[in-house]
Length: 233
Image 1: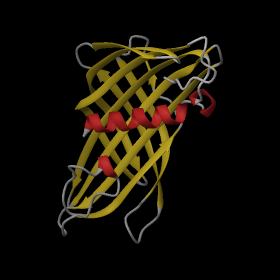
Image 2: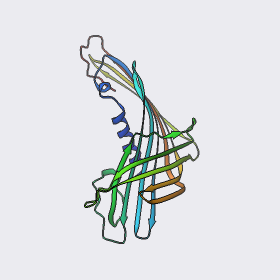
Image 3: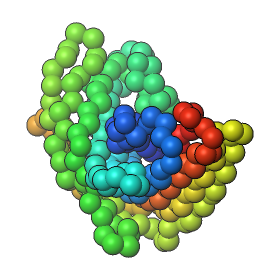
């Protein structure tokens, strides 16, 4: 569940971050993306109401070379509340988030996002997300909007683990695409509060959260004889 959340957040970030013009084939260019991302899955049971909160924050720098360097954040939160004393839940419309959820009758189910950035220390041993995100309840017959206020801090447990990779692709008659990535990832604890409308949830040292840093570079080198090479990172 937690890694699925991390993957979805990364996909949403890259989709939103890369300009459409950068996706088009060009003769020669380089692209660089550096991002920091934190995620966590939280749960709280109050009587019959089970509240599940999945949160992700990102801060990314991206751009082409030559070209401007841009910065963009992405904050995402999914809130799901079930009445576990009632009948079985009907899940599935939120895809990856719905997998593995608890039983009961859904009373709130919504996903919200803003372009607010994750904050972090230089050495990425601590990160924080402080923002307010509008979320619409998608349970049939509801549709109300609530504000989800996040004030959360991630603290690294141990050290970040490194993973590197390189890829070289040669397309005869068109050119080459070279890419490399350097990823740091570690376990973290989460402390802070989540306010859903008027309801306040507090968390202290929750385990199983993650911190991840990705540095990605890609270079396209077109063949001199190629008029319109179909190459991209």
